[in-house]
Structure formats: structure tokens, C-alpha cells
Length: 206
Length: 206
Image (cartoon, rainbow over all chains, first blue to last red; front, side, top):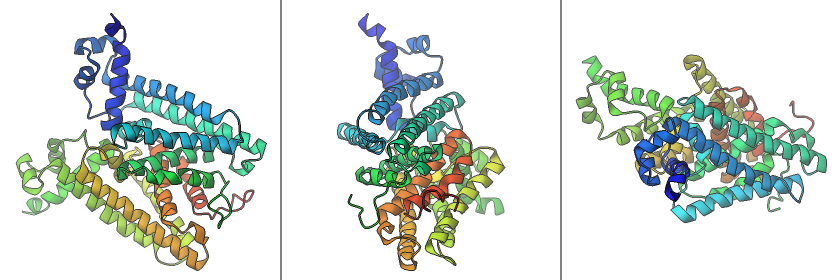
């Protein structure tokens, strides 16, 4: 009873873990079911297809992430400090995952975005919505920064917010490729340049 | 005779085109052979495996790209102007590909990096080498910029060069996900911030 009632969640969790490491195409329904300890027949009771399961994986993952993003981007401190809190948390999450698995699996949403943008329109739409929300959360913080004086108003635009999200994805991509997270030490200093809050040259230690 | 002698190149070209659109895992040897009009038996005369073919696809693609990167990053103009020439060319190449296919397929090397970093060590090494070379070419340009006065010396470091490469990849990822290249209009202004050559706030039109 307990197992049956959690079968749906186990399928979502298993798909999330497997796809985070090896992507969408490489993972089949049979492997997801085996890892979740759910019979293949039951899979189609819960999900129409691997595609619809993946759309839910994206939603579930982003819903949890969204809470974490909001927590970091609100609360005490200037908007710039809160943006730094987000970046520190993202880098810390990559480190924690590395400590568990010994691999750099990168960003599940970014991985699926690269693999599925031209392949699976339903999943693509969910991913695009998640990244739009990320840019929206950063944009709101930049606007707050223009208000509290921690961000110059000229940088509190949507395009800059999108650039911050893009930069996170690109930096994680290169760290994943290198199998080495040390380059992410530079993520905050570089994001800071994008939002126009770079310390003066020659004072880069700040 | 003519067809036979070009079979190897046709296999490489076909794999490159198919993988650029749909990735590595989704493409099988049979489909590559069909598109190249080469019998499957002949495939293994030229390549040991799909993995070794893909390693050569990466090398071949990057060798052609490297020539283009070098052309833009050398020649007349300040180092900053040459860096802009590279970015303009990269964005233009995405637009040309879009005009041909109606899709945003993004960056072949970045796509394969996301998909294969933890899966195929031989391909991963070639990809890592290509991105290291990209960072090296940008770094050399930044150092020249510190010499010609177009880049502040504090920004002429390897980490900044790597950040430029990461930013290109992240921006292309988001454009691919959106199926829309218009956000790449901001790529140069944002790269310019990363290399510390942002126009003063309030003068963003420069």
C-alpha cells in the first residue's frame, strides 16, 4: 500500500536522477521503472509517455528550485547581496551533488534544454517557462537593487537578468565538461560584472 | 570511384549535421550511413564506433571553427574590436543556420558537451580541448588588449577569457530553447561587461 501510493513520486524521482546524469534520449521507460521498482504496466497508469513524464519532471524540479531561488533573492541585505546569495547557493548545490556522486552532472534544466529544444515541444515549453521565471526573479531583484542603490538603474533591465541566467548555464556547462567545479569560484565575480557592480579594476579582491 | 573516395567525408558530414540537430544518443550508425549513402559495412572500415566517429566530428568541426576564430581575432583594429568581430561572426553564423533550417540548433560543441560530458570520455576530452583552445584564443586577445589599451589589464586573465566562452554558450543555449535568436543582439554588450569595457552607465547606446 505504502509502496503503491508512492509509485508516481518514485517514477518522477527516478526519471529525474537518471536524466540528470545521462539525459533524456539515453533513458528508457523500462530503466525508469526498474529503478523506481514499479511495473512497466503501471507506468502508463500514471503517465501517457516518457515525454509527459519528463514535462512533469521539469515542473517538479523547477517548483522545488523556485522556492530556493526565492528564499535567496528575498530576505535581509541589499539586492546585490541577495543575488550573491543565490549564486553562492547554486555553486554550493553543484558541490554537494559532486560530493555525493563524484560527477559534475550540471543543471538538469539546462541539460534537457540543450537536448530537447528542437525535439520535444511539450518539454521545451516547460523548460522555456522555467528559464523565463528565473530571469523574472533576477530581474525583480535588479529592479530592487536600482531602488536600494546596490545596482545602477541602467543594469536593472530584463536583458541583464537574462544574461545572468545565461551566464550561470554557460559556466555550469564548462564545469561539467571539465569535470571540475573550481571554475565556479569565479561565477560571482563575473555575474557581478554583468550587473554593472564590478569593483574597480585593480581592486578585484573586494 | 568518386563516391567511394568521399565516403569518409560524407559520413563525417552526415554525422555532424544529424548530431547538430538531434544530438548524439538519438542518432544511430544506420541513419548516418543512410544519409551519407554509404553501406553500413563500410562504416566500420572507416570508423571503429559511433564514439570514434564523433570524436572526429568534434575535431573536424573545431578545426574549421578555429580558422574562423583566428581570422576574427587577428587582423586590423584594437583587441576589443577584434573580440567584437568574433562575437558578431558567431551571432551571424547562428542567423545563417536559422535561415537555412528554420531551427536554432545552437552550438554543436556545446550541445555535445552537455550530452556527453559524463558518458563518453574520448569525446569529452576532445570537447574539453576545443573549449580550452577557445578560451586560449580569447585570452591571447585580452592580453593584446591590455597592451593596446583597449582592455584594462585586470581583465586580461584566463578566467575572464573562460567567462566569455561560457557566456557565449549560455546565451546560445537560451536562444536555442526559445527558438529565437533576438536575445543574441545583447551578446556583445554583455561580453563587453565581462571584459571590463562597458560604456559608462547611462551611455549604454555606445
